[in-house]
Length: 311
DNA sequence: CGAATTTGACCGGCGC
DNA sequence: GCGCCGGTCAAATTCG
Image 1 (tube, rainbow, N blue to C red):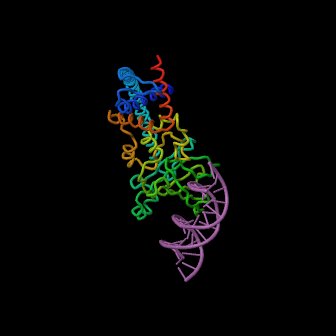
Image 2 (cartoon, rainbow, N blue to C red):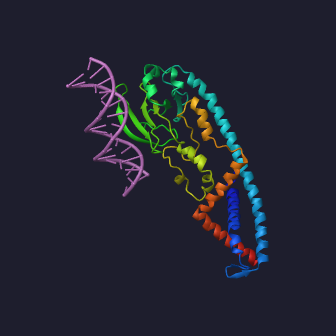
Image 3 (cartoon, rainbow, N blue to C red):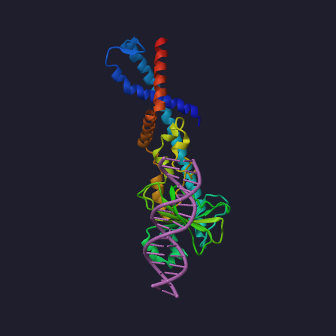
């Protein structure tokens, strides 16, 4: 998509918004003073009407672009879901305790069980009591580089390491993590290399997150942010150090059963016109909150008015 | 300088 | 009761 056209449209759109908001106050008197010049009400309203028409056109253009973007986003999401559905069944069928992914991709995660899907898991049969006490235990197998000792599993959440231990059954250390994104979220994660295959890292999750992953929060709350990227450095927009910035991150801590809910939760319903309208307004409002933007806007407006009057 | 990580100490459960 | 082991705490250290 042409970014410059985006910026242009938004700039004009927001300037229109600003004009709409501020002009009634200015027009209380019979004359408007611009840079020391007195303009008649006729002149002023004529210019404003003209401006308003132009702004309406820009608004329509912008709405179209947003609609197109939403549609392509939905299409992409559908494709991703298809891809996930196609690749996940064969992995879950694997009867062995350790599940390997076929590719060497570092972030290739295979999730095994929470209370439902781990019913066939050997360990869950051995320890049914533990299963009852602990709300949700799921396990993820991640294929990583054998030389990589970081024990980092990129799952979209923000973790704080609070301990590391070498256990008896496994020479490689086990790292303990707590969810650090929300103080009220008590989810824990244990990460340890597999005894059999040092390339595979086993991540055990205990409990359920009571919040969306930071990356998804970005996607749902920060729709305006992708627009304001031109004025805000991208680095400052991402709270997650380990994850790859604002890229789409999948919540892989949930098994298939819990997936539906997560999907409904994470997928912004872009279909309804109300949401689209809301998105547009959200974008405009966050733009007008940006001091850099408002300063540039003020300069643009005054410059435009000045040039219009001097014609 | 504040936040994140490391690492040794400590604690509780369990088996002998 | 004792020792082992997994899990957690918290002071020290590192990093951005």
